[in-house]
Length: 422
Image (cartoon, rainbow, N blue to C red; front, side, top):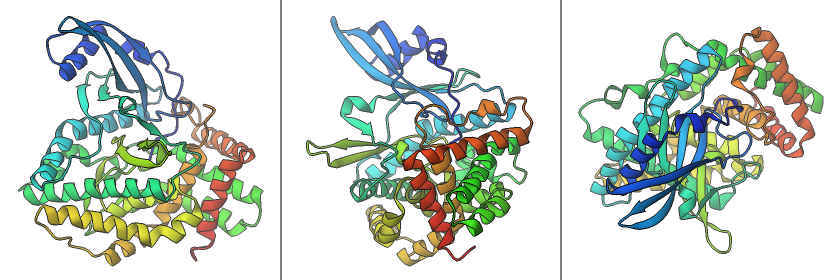
């Protein structure tokens, strides 16, 4: 789950992206016989983007074989914070993503190639810098290949979902092939996959006061909207105080295990469209939260964060079955058979309903605001935790004036009301 926004570090790229660092990236991409002439840091993200990192463009002018050229890269920079828990947590997440790109993606793609299949649709990682306080990941700029984000306020329709779930199935299945081949458990080979949510004593509890504020704010919003009194009580008296334990429970692996992206919402997919505006290809981005769990974690995250209620209820079984066919096809190409059925997947998905409610609440209350006035981790600062929670609850309440956010909130309230839980 993406952390709330931490805007206000616009100059970070100018500080961290040095001439030497950009030169190293260019040489990693184009070879040692290039000459960097100049580069420019060009932000291209919208307000509210880059919740855990600053993501910026780097436009590079260089010379190769006596000719002038230009290329663009994406630099993902670990954001600073005034809050100690946030500093440690984001460093942990950044190390996870660096390891995923540099160590795990190559071996996943090797397994797919062995099976006669194409590589994963994931950005090429060109260079990483792990220097404390200046952590950077350089990625190819997929805009140069025609990929772009879909408006998060629109969500995903069937055409977009078919692409997303097909690529997620390929990622999940490739990790199963890798585990089958490896003589060592993947959590031992890549210990950064084992993160704070799997530790017995959760180390960053104060960090989640922000999420507590979001959840409480949705509870207050339910009362303001009217007709959701029982749902409001459930959100405020069950989901809010038990948020960390319920979220951790939702992430737990079952007998169905794979590497999952975990932060699967519309902003973490890039699409390429044809001339008629029909999506033809998807690329998965943002792997700061990758871990081993059930594939249904990613499936429920997409549906609860990025689709309309009617769509996810009418298309869920169809989506799960289409996902399963791709997953099974990849495994069979690699000489394996799935050790679970599509009905098992449906049951596993259903067992994570409360996890889905939490995702729907947080995404509806924290990620759709596009004016840069969302939730900042520096809101924690030196403030009393209760003060922070109250301030964030008030911010969520003010979002009801936005019809898109209001409809998304009502959607998740309806899900809870019809679940039979309250």
